[in-house]
Length: 393
Figure 1 (cartoon, helix red, strand yellow):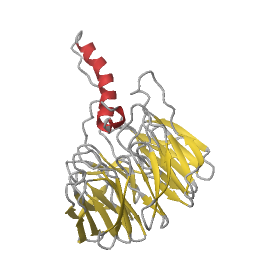
Figure 2 (tube, rainbow, N blue to C red):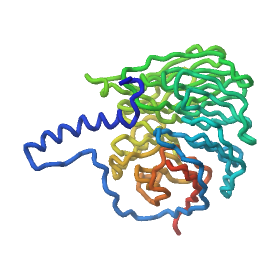
Figure 3 (cartoon, rainbow, N blue to C red):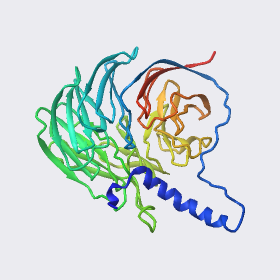
Figure 4 (cartoon, rainbow, N blue to C red):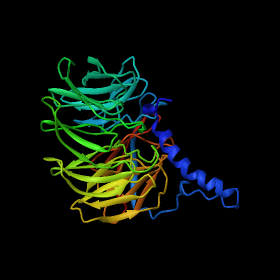
C-alpha cells in the first residue's frame, strides 16, 4: 500500500479500530461489549428554532464515491456548485433556479473557488481549472502532480492550489502558467484531504499534513512565517497524524486553525505568532461568531472558545461520535450536520441544542454557507438546499 494515499476514512477508522480492538479482546473474558466510540442516540430537544426549507435542486452525483468535500461558493447572490462527476452549475440563491449548467468531461475533487467572475476547480486526475463564471466555459487548465482536494483560490493575478502530495502551487491568473511551487514534508501516513488555502493581502496561507500553517509570499512563494498548530506524538504512525484538513477562519487580523490529534490555535496574521491554543482533534474546521471560535472534535464535543484566549465559553457533548461537520454560524446559532444527515442548531450564547431537522439522510461533508438567517446545504448525494432560520414566538 502507498501510505501517502491512505484515505481519510480508512485512517480514522484504523485509529478507532486500534482502540476498539482492546475492547474486543477484553470481551473474550467478559460479557461487556461496550464500545466507547459508538455514536450516541439522539434524544428529544426543546425546539426553540423554526427551520423552513425554501428550495431544493439536484447537482449531479454530489460528492460521488471518493469521500470528497466539494464545497459551493456564494457570490453576488449566486451559488456556484460542482459535482464529482464533472458537472458545474450556477444557482440563483434566492429561489434555487439554475442559471446555467456545464459538463467538464473530467472528475472533480476540489472546489469551488471564486474571484471576479472566475471559478477555480481541482480535478481528480491532477488538474487545476479556471472557468468563466458567466457560463462555465473553460478558460484554462494546468496539470499538477496530485489530486486537488480543496478549492483553489485566486486574487486576479495568481491562482493557488494545494495538492495531496504536499505542494502549494501558484499559477498565472490569465494564462495558467506555473509561477512558483512550495514543497512541504509529507508524513508517512496522512488523512485524505487538505485545507482550503486562503489568499489575503500579498500572501497565500495554507495548512499542511505536518501540523503547520504557512504564509507564503505571492510574489515568489517564499515563506513569510510558519506556525505549528500540532506536534506529532505517539509511538505509531497513526498516533502521529496531525493533518490540518478542515477550513480555517479569519477575523480581525487573526487566523484560526485546528488539526487532527492536535490543537486549535489562534495565530497573528501579521507575523505568525500563536496567540493561544487548546487541545482538540478535528478534521472539519473552525468558525467564528459572537466573540467565540467554534470547533467540533472527533469525539463529538462541540466547543466555543473565547476569541480573547480566556478559555472555554461552553461545550456540548450530546452528539458524541456522530461525525460532525464544520460549524457554521447563522443568525444567533451554530449549525452542524451529523453522519446521518441531521442538522443541529446550537445557541451561540450557551451551547444548548435549540433546533433540529433532517435535510438529507446522505449527510453533508461540504461546508455549509450562511447569509443572514439563510443556510445553504449541499448534501453528499447532490441536493443543494436552502433553509431559513427563525426563532419560535
